Length: 186
Image 1: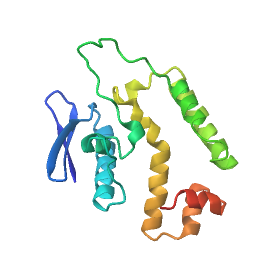
Image 2: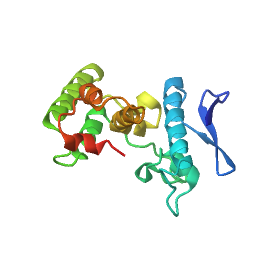
Image 3: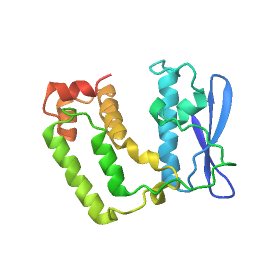
Image 4: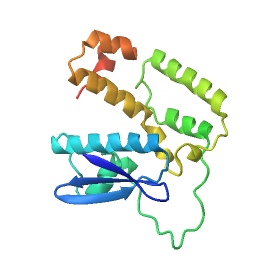
């Protein structure tokens, strides 16, 4: 279990216990919905660690691993703010989409999934403008946006764990082949 705490400045912190230790870390956001989303992600990571379906890698601090949602690639190295006074470069929505689509391995998605994702990208860019600075969505923690596919994966996995019929899951998410179904099974 993890608890949200809002500081007098409006910034949210999260407090949780792991292996008998109490941790309190900033979520670097003042947006309640973003803080709730991060709380759910952290609670899910704690649950997976408790069930031993996930383990903290050797050499990684457990609190960093938990705050990164159990993903080593999302662990942000500590920064020395005393010497680094420059702001991080602005990341635009268009660049974020480009980075996301480039990171998808060839053949990893069905063609109808790819076309649907591109359709959503076009609509989103039309509404938000391609030059929109992503940091404005979640303060300086724009990395949360990288979790869209993780959310889809968790949704499908949770439905399967709850015993929802596979045909209904396929209808929800548009899977048409056994290969696509296998990618979401644990």
